[in-house]
Image 1 (cartoon, rainbow, N blue to C red):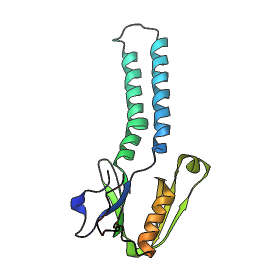
Image 2 (cartoon, rainbow, N blue to C red):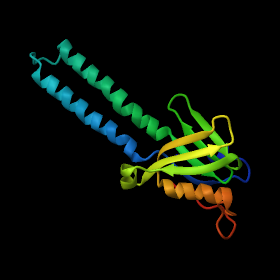
Image 3 (spheres, rainbow, N blue to C red):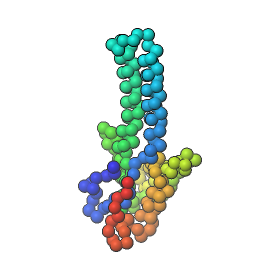
Image 4 (cartoon, rainbow, N blue to C red):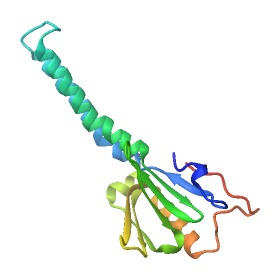
Length: 176
């Protein structure tokens, strides 16, 4: 998870790295259960009892396609997305087949805010909003785990004297 150490410049180190909160997987799991239940019900009520019936293959193929689209695809999107904060930039990476990302140098960030609704507060996540001095204006990072802590880390890097190093001057170990 996160960014490879070989993609960091000299003197740059990872402060923290995370991915979208697990709540993004709740709906895909519900879809998986519903699709399996519907496919099982459809197979049970089919008039023919033979396994070589084309209708059986159609139900199984439909269920497989639905599982791939509504369960596997969201899981792959979740597992390949990451948010990484280094002592120099904020790195947002996502994508399964086509990787995309955005790097925001810390010195270009103007404002760091977060938003949390009731469910987010219960689950310990939220939306991080990064306003920067670019044409895109702002980056919205949804469902960030421990969003208040990440907002504080970025704010300390921006406006404090903290460069992410421990008291002895060594970089801290990357956090998951």
